[in-house]
Length: 186
Image (tube, rainbow, N blue to C red; front, side):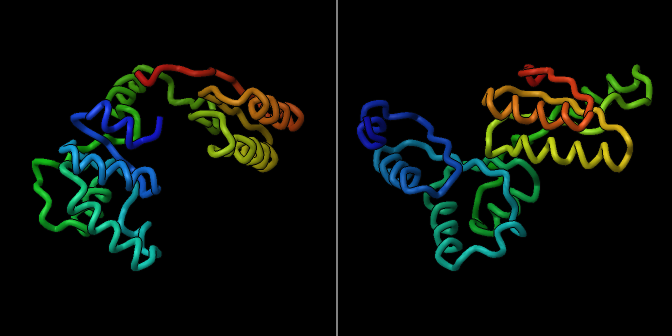
C-alpha cells in the first residue's frame, strides 16, 4: 500500500515528520488536506544549514510555516533554526526531545563510583553501515597505537557481518573491547 492510500485509510491525528524526501512532502500535503496535525522533528541547527540552496531555504520556510503545527527540537539551537524559518511560531508549540542520556541520573551514579574510567572509547548505536562501525574500530586502533592500549565499549546490535568485521579489526590490533549488545536506554 502506498503512502496516499495509507494516510487516507488510517487518517492519523498527528504526523511527525523529519525530512524533505518526496514521500514526506506528499505525506505533508495529504495530511494537511485530511486535517492531520503536523509536527516537525529535527536535531539540526542553523549553522549546519548555512550551505543549503535558496530552493531548500524557501522550502524550509514554507514547510515550517504551513506544514508544522508544532515543533520538536533536540536543542536550543534547533529551536533557533525553527524560529529563523518561522518567526511567528507559538512558543507553546515548541518541545524538546534531547538526543542524550539523562545526565543528572548518570552524574548521581558517578558520585558512588571510582574516578577511574573503564573505557577509552565507546560506540553506542545500531551497528549498521551508516553508523560507521569500521571507522570506530580504526579510531580505537589509532588510540591504541598512540597510547599503548585502548579499551573500547560497544553498545548496540545490528548487522552480524559488520560486527564481525569490527571485532576482528580490534582483535587483530590488540584493542581490548567489551561488547554489551543492545541495552535499554534507562
